[in-house]
Length: 288
Image 1 (cartoon, rainbow, N blue to C red):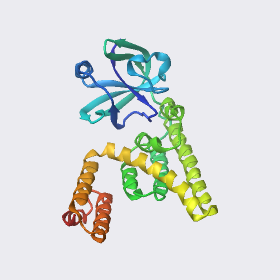
Image 2: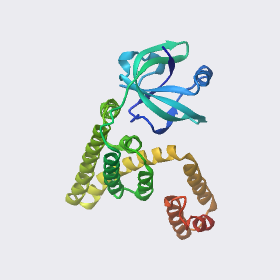
Image 3: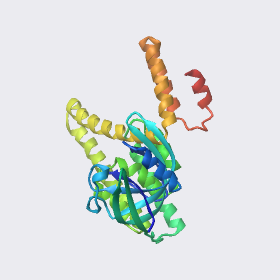
Image 4: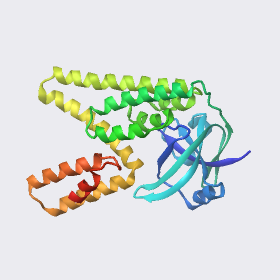
């Protein structure tokens, strides 16, 4: 039975047919060679709790994972970023440490096509509408809404945005575990409703508390969500994040007056929220 290198994942929504930028702390030369030997295929396996890779046993991982194609590997300050495209869902049948390599065998696990193409599109459109409405509550929501619009499947949408919702590792794994595409969409919808309820409650509390105390709690909750979302967006589009950081560094080093700094900051914000095909993007870039 064929085995592949394992990339463990914790507290992450892993689904088939999705592009991922996976942060990997360590990837030794033997592992890189094994990936090449296996035609750039790996198994992404969700863990029940964070644990050292070579300490893992079958009882430490969930029963299902995904087969993935490794498209690129880049080193970072804290390890590696692995760009992978997931393929089909699989059932993990064994997990073995072989020297410095963790490998697993598997059996294919079919998905149930229990929803028509129109039904899937309608459900996807509903989820997009719900998420887009939620983004209006947060700074940078326009940029996030642009990512929402580009999602082409329920799996892609769930993998991107369920990461920021109040979901436990078990709840995130349940999205992979279900064989039903319709059920997966409904689980995502349920998680969105819970999150919206949290946002609504925070806003209601803000109305009831005095301005100082209420705004403190609301600001802390929103900033936490913004931080998580911005990290994921940066990981998905590292070139855009690098471009923004480069502009901010130049602004800091310019020593410009405070009033000029405010105007330039507003211009940078507008520029970073523009879509690549926006007709005003070139003029904004020239301005910066």
